[in-house]
Length: 361
Ligand SMILES: Nc1ncnc2c1ncn2[C@@H]1O[C@H](COP(=O)(O)OP(=O)(O)OP(=O)(O)O)[C@@H](O)[C@H]1O
Ligand SMILES: [Mg+2]
Image (cartoon, rainbow, N blue to C red):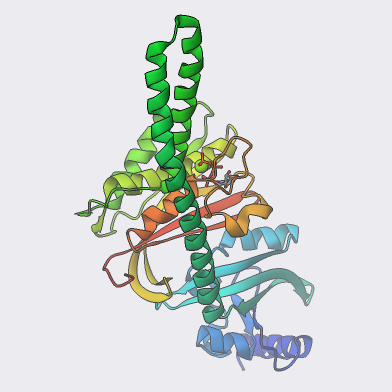
């Protein structure tokens, strides 16, 4: 028997005894070189490969795209700092996508540290219905606010006009009062217009997303008083797609501005683009999308607003109107796309998905 085979037998025996039989959680054990040294039957099913095929394979050759990168694993080996990520999408080399909850911890075998990765698959259907529910809630909140804004807007015009007429009749000292009415009416009109949301139909054109992303990048670079570190991570091979340049730009700027407001000098924002396959938008599987991510390493979205983040008038800032992200959501919807966010302290990622075809409409 070869050395390899003896080792595999030993490892198999050890981990089969250490892990409960019939475990539904997929378990992958890695050695110090971050190569696979054991997978349980649930992981064989998840990875669609047997233990003998996976044995000694470096983990980076199993997943094409995953937040579990070698740096994080290496850190776990050296510091023992365990981690877990919920709602992680893993992509395989054959473009298969799964959404899982991952826990990485360290174990010891024959006095050597190993990494134990546990994958719990999150039910796709559950995720889709949660998204549909959120979408419905968002639409009702938006409609309610729009109705209210509409009702305020009409008398506001009359109020301002009357103050202007009155102004003509008053002496200089009294004009101060009408000026105040006009100023406040203008402020309210501004707010009401934002509450009503974007009112122009999008101007759709076949173009490259990088035109917009690069413009936003330049804008923040030239006006960056907080000295935030700006990074680009583009996939130049993304084909052109149909979108409204101004609206996409406004969306990215709103998201970036929110980040800038909470970041400090030295913090960073990354603008990232990728072509992504097999995503779910509005409950439908979309074959190919452009994925634009805006990632920062700031404090993260406050917990109490995470579930209602995209609703109008939800803000974590004392001076915020809470309309920015609701407007972004409307703009992305006009493109049959999806806007989502994942956030924890030190890592916030907004993702805009734009389908290449009209299949999500
Ligand atoms: N990158 C981020 N990091 C931390 N918190 C964020 C981030 N982006 C958004 N937020 C939080 O989400 C809230 C909602 O953002 P949104 O843009 O909808 O409203 P706002 O910025 O408060 O007001 P407005 O954009 O209308 O001026 C923000 O107030 C902030 O608390
Ligand atoms: Mg904002």
